[in-house]
Amino acid sequence: MRKLGVGRSLSAPSVIGAASLLLLCSIAFAVSLGSARLSPDRVFDGLFDTGDAAARQIVWNLRLPRVLVAALVGANLSLAGVLLQGVTRNPLAGPHVLGLSGGAGFAAITVVVAAPGTPVQFVAPAAFIGAIGAAIVVYGLAWRGGISPVRFALAGVATAALFIALSTAVLASSDLFTQSVLSFLAGGLFARDWDDARQIAPYTILIGSGAVIAAGTLNLLALGDDVARGLGMRVERTRLLLVVFAAGLTGSAVAVSGMLAFVGLVVPHAARLLVGSDHRVSAPLAALLGASLMVLADIVARLVIAPAEIPVGIVTAVVGAPVFLLLIRTRT
Amino acid sequence: MTAPIKQTSQYTAVTVPVLGANDLFVGYGAFEVLCGLSLRFSSGEFTAIIGPNGSGKSTLLRTLARLIRPQRGQVTLGGQDIHEIAPREFARRVAFLPQAPEGPPDLTVEELVWRGRYPHRGLFASTRAIDRAAVERALERTGIDELRQRALATLSGGERQRAWIAMSLAREPDLLLLDEPTTFLDIGHQAELLELLGSLNRQRGLTVIMVLHDVTQAAQYARRIVTLRAGQIMHDGSPTDVVTALRISALFDATVDVILDPSTGSPIVVPRASTIVTNTATGGA
Image 1: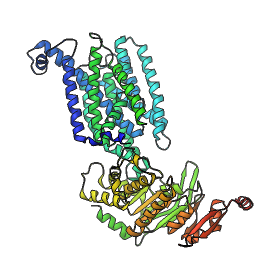
Image 2 (image 1 turned 180 degrees about the vertical axis):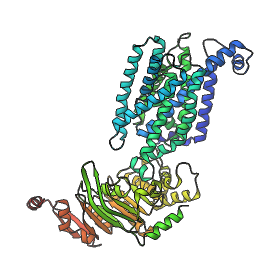
Image 3 (image 1 turned 30 degrees about the vertical axis):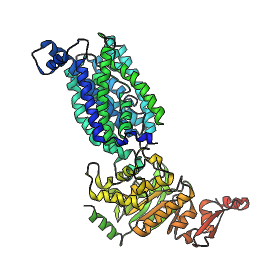
Image 4 (image 1 turned 45 degrees about the horizontal axis):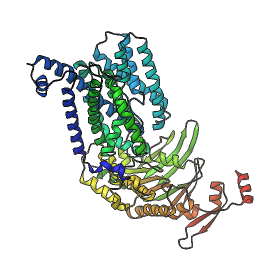
């Protein structure tokens, strides 16, 4: 059983510090790499010196916003995963599995297809509402005088399938290009720019910090509803708040990157494996790890068939699926 | 900040019963589990609630623990309706331990016990000396001091149950409510656990109310026994008053003999599988 406690010798500050460093390195690496090869000093110029117009365009206007969007998406989905796994006490839960991504995606796609001129800043709120809608559907299906984690997860699986099918139907009936359709369904970061970064950043900053602050409540929920209630916690109210947080994080991520699978499912496990079951530590760690993972995955997505690229969701699925299978085989 | 509140509750306990249930109706939908039940508990009592399956024992305990809101009637703590008391304020005074609680397998005993301080600390309080002292006392009183670094999954059933009791005691409650705390324990650990609860009751004045399955055990450790059948109280009294062959046979629709423990004098229930008597018993039901 000591295997479960592998990470217990690692102190929380050192793991968080290491993960922050990993994220910074991943971002630096991602900004330096691309189909146009730039020397490190030109990358530096592109970031901090407006004199080199070509470097400025590539590094500042093309790569950096995309890399930041990747990091924010990874952080949001991973945090949403931590919240949902904690709320449902189900290690198989995640924003994708529980239908929140599907609801967000369906809402975002409907807005984009039905009103093609919609300014980009309205897509994230629409996706947020879609994610909340999906959460309400899942909650409603699972509610029977209270929420049982198992019913919640099963209702989520069904809802996810339904919304993804509806999204596909809307996309199929639209005249969008195959590339953007694929990119949305599988999750992609093709041509993300500062507008997208500005769209998701407030959600990460506001709801993300709210989620990290509220993560302590997950420690009580982990003891079971009766014990949590017995300790004086308002269980249903807390659970609802955390699900709304998860919907906001998921909705804003889906609005800029489409329906990415596996990130929100796998990263929370990795964080728990490193630091144990204290969510006050594993939640911020998951955000940092998720951000790093997405930044690195997006490098692969951009370069593997350069100058063309594949949706980053394919990379996260190829990495995430085996890792997830490995986790469930070793941990249960 | 919390000390004056505790003082008050202990002071008022002298005049008012600590916990009282008045004309309680509790049900799930149309199905009524408790029908007009009234009951009072005084400070320092050690009570076991017994009764056949489905008699409403657990429902009663959960209603007393503020987990279920009664449809009619009320539960009072020191004279105040418990649903008018803030959840954390109630949790500081009353601890409830459900049957077979489950925590994350890699959680350590010490981390678990710390979570029991939530009613006092909330989520964001810094670690005060008073919290640390309460956690240490809880670990020590349950005899699991040396297990503090162990993960829950590595503990035996008896050790794990003591860890949960330590978690419940960390808030330093006046009352401890337990739902079948000996389930899943072998007889050695069952006796050890009840012995522990008995000593907490005698030495610390902790008021204990527990639902128990085993009537003999209830008679052996509790000083007061309440029997429940179809959501109503049948008997309420000392073990020797309540645990008689006639009363226990009627309560469970079973045929039992009761003999007295030669060393302690406490009643021991011996089930008899007599078909002839069973016929007359079921004929009555």
